[in-house]
Amino acid sequence: MSIKSVVKMGNKELGKPSLPITNFADPKIKTIIQDMYDTMIAEGGVGIAAPQIGYNVRILMFGFDASENHPNELSIPLTILINPTYEVLSDEMHEDWEGCLSVPGMRGMVPRYTKLKYSGFDPKGNLITQECSDFHARVFQHEYDHLDGILYPQRIRDMSTFGFNDAMSEQLAVVAE
Ligand code: NI
Image 1 (cartoon, rainbow, N blue to C red):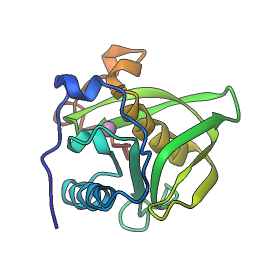
Image 2: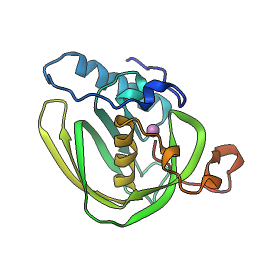
Image 3: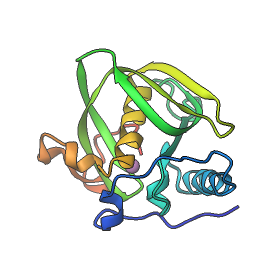
Image 4: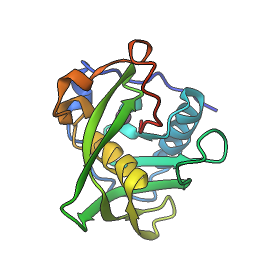
């Protein structure tokens, strides 16, 4: 059990592209993934990317249990992706709320592709390929952006939607992290 402190927006490290994993046998990978998981659960995030806890490598994870409080959303199984890639399957984009563990207490409306296919390697080195849409696709794109050094505020089109949760309490939403 190792909960790390989350690197916050403004730290230059979050803006750096992360490096691919080249040696899947490196025991450090297991530690990074465990730290990511423990931190994501402790912080109540829907997802997390390795650079958010100080590891500059291309690993992300996400998962969402809709049964608890969000009957209108579809659950996303816990997914760990090393060296992910993706292909957009439709030009259609949709705006919805996002938040981020690196931008605590805030949210904003972010346009994302609604349908895509992602690939990546699981912790054992097996290739995973998954088509997804809507919230699942949004969460993937949010976490993937972290690996390229991009935070969601950089994607907001209408900055009047960006603000503090406690100042926008009338707008309830499930947010990607
Ligand atoms: Ni984030």
